[in-house]
Length: 522
Image 1: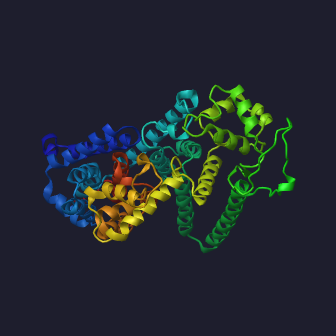
Image 2: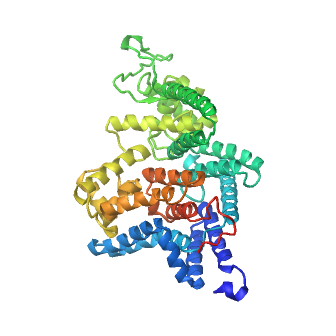
């Protein structure tokens, strides 16, 4: 409509504006995400180019799976008891329908507009990560919990955006899009920020896409002789990486086995040590429950801190346990000497709930926490407050539900009710505020939409790889979306839905890399 009035592609520019708002919004604001989603569908309705839209939708077969999943969710309301929750859930998922549908129904996004959106995304991730970093390390976060570093969206989702930014910058570098020197600055910064963030999901996603990128590059080496040398180099690289990783992990679990006769009986002050050699909890490769003098820890800690030894730290964990773990991580005995060796900064860390002296060192800290939680899980420990243990409980509960609801599911309206009841049925140790959904989008969708919804969702994610000749961007986005759904309920929040829908649409419904910018596709 506006195209005829103004004699220029007004609706294309309006669509680009909506996509720009969405790209900014996914790093900063739910409000911007809402504005962008409303804008893009409103622009399509006003454009009223329905005949050509229908032809494009028939050509872009992947969008039919998007439509099927959303309307299957609507249909499932008929066997849901809680209609109010179902309607609310579908409203949250509207960007999942709206953004891919409009992009599939509209003319393919020209390459120069696509490149502009990539620059906007890289700029926003760079700005947001720098702001997060400066705010966190300038004292803006009182408790110094690394999860507080992401100010605007979930730290887990921002880690996904950071990984995407790394490889999108690499994609721009390879294809000479924009200033190549700028990409060489952004990539190291994004890697450093990801390292600091301590998000295991982000680390795993980085490794997965890095390995894919290596094999993707190998297939494109034209001469067989060069390819053979490249393969040998890759094998050497992977072998070296495996050895380094093994030694790195061994540093957490290798500990000197000490017999009871080798352990000291008394502290330098003459107080007896307590040794529980049957308890295998470790911190940074050292056993926690040996060389313990609770008497000296309590007495000397209360002289150094205003927070009592028998109280809770600021994360509401027993402070005595936090202190013991922290001292153990330094390889010290739990006695008066160890307490007085702590610096004022370390005292504050312990008061704030930091359990390890390596807790500020990125990957090492997260692996240490991961292994500690796994040890707790093996010993039947309390899962509350421990992300790994909680996720195991979530998945166990999801599987319990699927034993009865694997075919049609519960319906979108009864998803939460099914989890609530399952936690009661299985006598879960999780407290009420930690009784979430599965933290796995495939399981959650299977429970709510049934087996057909699950299959349609998997096909939908993978279909763009085969619908058109997939380039590197399409591959990295597909891998990122597929892997993220293994570790998150991506479609359960506005930010997750919008990130998924936006990148899916950009990878699937843009101008082909081999097409002219003046493509005349309908």
